[in-house]
Length: 459
Ligand code: F0G
Image 1 (tube, rainbow, N blue to C red):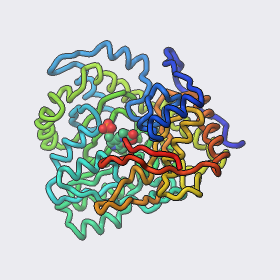
Image 2 (spheres, helix red, strand yellow):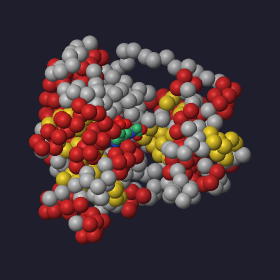
Image 3 (cartoon, helix red, strand yellow):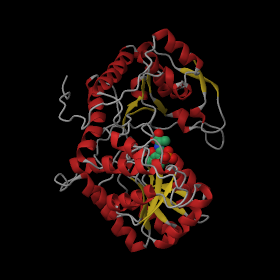
Image 4 (cartoon, rainbow, N blue to C red):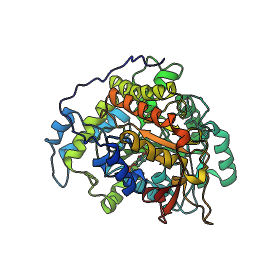
């Protein structure tokens, strides 16, 4: 085995542990049957290693917990809000802050302010909640990510980049006035946590300046993106994560943030902008949907934990260990010849189920089947990102997406290297008996977002 050298380690030690229930194979078999072979329907108590998401699942530091005790639970003007405001301005560089309960709260307010009926919002691949809020505000999302992002095998290091020719075409077709902003995510989630380069962002800034179009940044995983820039982009290996994060943001006009990821908290988010008019409107609107503009649906203690978490999230030592752990798992998977999306992204490993179970037709749900088998083997919970998630078209036909994936999302600061070993070994076990694995049929299909509640039976 190559690649197992570990040149990083956690910049923390463990002070408190959360005990897990260890299950037996018969218990898992029963739990899975009761959950209709859908990992979303498993009880968390029946899960050993939970890789369903990296959202809201981080372990907070002793400093964050201490900060929670310093919560100023005033309805208006909480001290923790002013702390958070200062940290956001200093760390991210945006001028005005509106706290929200989580990322989609910020997406809702921003979309309502900036988007008019019939507008076009180009972006580097969609995210579910982001696109939905753009549509609910009367807009239409257009994908302008480079083609490489849609190819699991392509090893281009910045698969989050924008194709300017695609954007130019949209501007020529609809006119710049119909495009209120470009929606740019760092560490593109649906592409596998793939980063955008600063060179590409700089070009995009110059181009949008010419056409007077804003760039709004989905900053959810900006520090992880900054790490890839530091490691892979020419001219940045001597720059700190802090400096790179600031530079990324300087090429954009505002952001929405789900602090449940990068910023190391279990709940929280915000909207931050540089334009006074947009801020003023958002400050009016937040009262309707979230709460007063100095708490936005959060407790004072939540804002304090976030302010401290943001500071920890942009430390070089933290991010090296965070992404290092994901890369460690990915390399270990590759050593077992398990087919994964490349390059390895920032927040998880995406296994290619079409390659893993080539004998199962997509109509018999290879990724859903694989997620179920993984749980059976050792109690590792993952998520389907394939035909079940893609759903049906308006005419009722199933989408047959090119990518049929299982996402292994790694929570921050939660699991150890030994857990990563168990995950890879368990996946390798399943890989060894892959030829004996049969597909499934769907026996219950909900009308909306079927992946959450669908039920299956083994063939
Ligand atoms: N933007 C991105 C890129 C996200 O990944 C998410 C959430 C959101 C916005 C919405 O933020 O959940 O705080 O309202 N992603 C989670 C996931 C749910 O599992 O990938 P939220």
